[in-house]
Amino acid sequence: MSLVKKPVNGMKDILPSEMQIRDYVQSVIRDTYRSFGFTPIETPCMESIANLSNKQGGENEKLIFKVMKRGEKLNLETARTEGDLVDFGMRYDLTVPLARYYANHANDLPSPFKALQIGNVWRADRPQRGRYRQFMQCDIDILGEPSNLAEIELILATTTTLGRLGFKNFEIRINERRILKAMAAYSGFSEDVYDTVFIILDKMDKIGMEGVEAELLQEGFSKEQIQTYTGLFRGIKEAEDGISYLADTLGEYLETEVVNSLREIASSVNACKSAEFALVFDPTLVRGMSYYTGTIFEIAMPEFGGSCGGGGRYDKMIGNFTGKDVPACGFSIGFERIILLLLESGFQIPKQPKKTAYLIEKGYPGEKLPEVIAQAQDARKRGEQVLVVRMNKNKKFQKEQLAKEGYEEFTEFFNR
Image 1 (cartoon, one colour):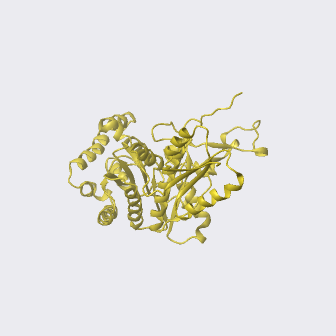
Image 2 (cartoon, one colour):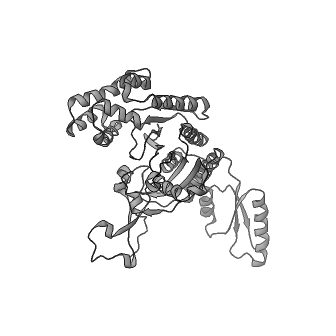
Image 3 (cartoon, one colour):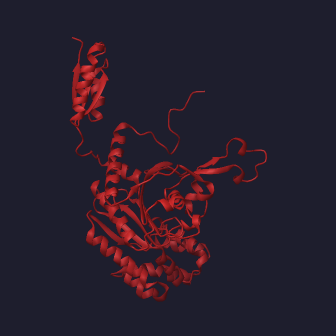
C-alpha cells in the first residue's frame, strides 16, 4: 500500500515563504504584547475530556477531536458509552486550558496575571477559506482584574498589534452579554431559552432580521415576544446612540453599571488608540461560547468579510475548577485569517536582513571549506543571513528557487 503525500483534510503543510511571514507576525505579536506587560505561558495540546465537555464551549464541544484510552484502560469488549472509550481531547481553544492552568498554579502567579499564549488548537470543523481543523491562536488574557481596565488594555494591545502589521480601517465590534439578557428578558423570553434565542440572533449577519424572526417563530415563541425583540434592534439602528436608546427603553431590565462600563471602555479606547480602527457597539454580537459573562468583542476586517478574532469576559470559568470565581477577560487574534489576508495582499516583511547564498562547486576541496564557512560566519556577525549549499548541476534553476525565498546575492566558490 502506497503512503499518502497530502496532509489530512483541513490541515496543511506550510512552505518556507509563508513560514517566514508567520514567524515575523508572531514576533510582532509577542513583542507588542510583552510591551503591554503580558507574560508568555504554554499549556498542553490535550486536556481531560471532562474539562473540554463542561457545556461552556458552545458549538465547539461538538467539534472535539477525542483521544481513545490506551493500553489496559481501553477495553472494547466491555465498553458501553463514549466515556468508556475516551479520556482526553485535543484542545479546541486556549481559554479552557488557561483556566485549568491558572487554577493549578494560582499561588505561584501574580494578581492580576496577564497571560500570553500562542499555540495550535484543533476542531473537527468543515474546512473553508481561512478555516482549518488545525490552526494557530494568539491569546492574551487578564486574570484577577474585575474592572473594565482589563477590557481597555486587551482592546488597545490587540489593535496596536494589528496596526503594527499594517491593518487599517477595521472594526472592533463590542457588546455585553448582560445587554443580550436584558433585551431577551424585556421581550418576554424566559431565562431557560436565552441560549436558543442567542444562537438564532447570532445568524443575523447571514439570514437577516426576517430570517431571525422566522426561526424564532419556528421555535414556538409568540409573535408578541418576537415583535418586541426585533423592534429593539430596529430602534437601535434608528437611534443616534444605541446604548442610550437601550438604557432608556429597557429601564430596570438593564443595570446602569453595564451602560456606564461600556461607555468608559469606548471613551478610554478612543482617547488612547494608536491604530486606525472604529469601536462599534453591535447589539447582535453574541459570541458562541456560553462561558462569556460580560463584555464581548470581535475584530471585523472588511477585506475578509468576517471575524478575524474576538473575546470577552468569562468570570465564572475558573470557579468551575476551584469553587471560587476569579475575574477573567481575554482577546484572541485569528492568526490564520490574518496570515491569509497578508498573503493575499502580497505582504513583504519590512527590514529583512540581507540574504546571501554561498554556492560551492561539487568538487571544491575539503581543506578549503573552513575558509568559506568562516567567511559566512563573519557575514552572519554583521547581521546578514547566509545560506551555504552545494552548487546544483542546473545552477540557473537553483538561483531562481533561492530568489523566490528572498536571496538577493550569490557568491560562487569554484575548484580552481
